Amino acid sequence: MTGISSKTLEARRGASSLEKMLGLLDLFTTASPAWSTEELIRVSGTSRSTCYRYIKALQAAGLLTPVAGGAWMLGPRVIELDRTMRLCDPVTAGGYPSMQRLAAQTGHTGLLCLLFSGTVMCVADARAPGAPAGLFSRGQRRPLFNGAASKVILAHLPPHQLRAIFARHRGTIAAAGLGGDWESFRHTLRTIREAGHSITQSEFLPGVLGIAAPLFNAEGGVLGSLGIAARIEEVPESAHAGLAERVAQAAREACARIAEEAQVAARPARAVG
Image (tube, rainbow, N blue to C red; front, side, top):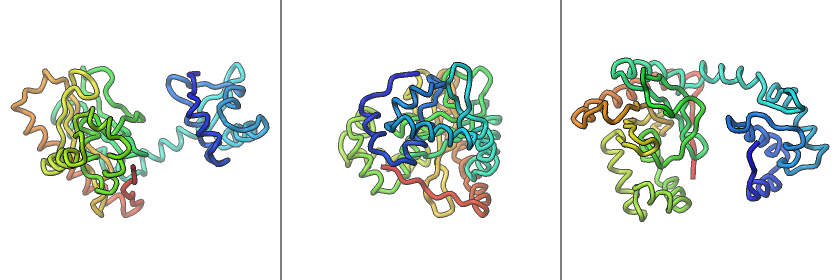
């Protein structure tokens, strides 16, 4: 397991009982996939008996499963939920065909991303042969301020959400080159909106070019982004505009499919800030 900061521990102690139980799931990561009962008790912010009840409830739901050495890992129910998400989520089901087609047409890695809890999550990817190591892949989250897939979502958030984000992350926003004050920040995002896409180079990974366009629900609220990633040296600057138009067209096609999928399960725009 990895260390848990005192700030995180304090936050857990102030959470509701349900939040504390569900919060145990957040501990399981690729860096720390297994936790002992004693470790879970220590970070849960609850008594030993209460944490035992949480663990047993999560086990009964299939969200945790016991492994050797008295440890726990995520359970098979997570796999079942992932399958349901792949098949039924409007963004995944509606955007995946366009993302795959875009990747095949351009020869670059396709990425389908979703706005999630103040971050951007990759929900599908189509990896190109010889793609750079460390590219965004399904289930990974990244901040809103770096990379084309994130910036094009950020640019289309409502003004009141952008004000809250700027007030909370002013230093990070300035460091990302998005503007050192509110007017500069607004201008940068307006430029992205007017272009209809975002193009970035070496922002999240050195040597990687990213091009992304926004995805919207039927009401015009931003849901996520669709784009490509490639090695910078493989794409001459003269080709950027043409690729950006292909990405934007693929995103428009995906939006139409998402609207069709949403007739069964509409997805509202996510609130952040």
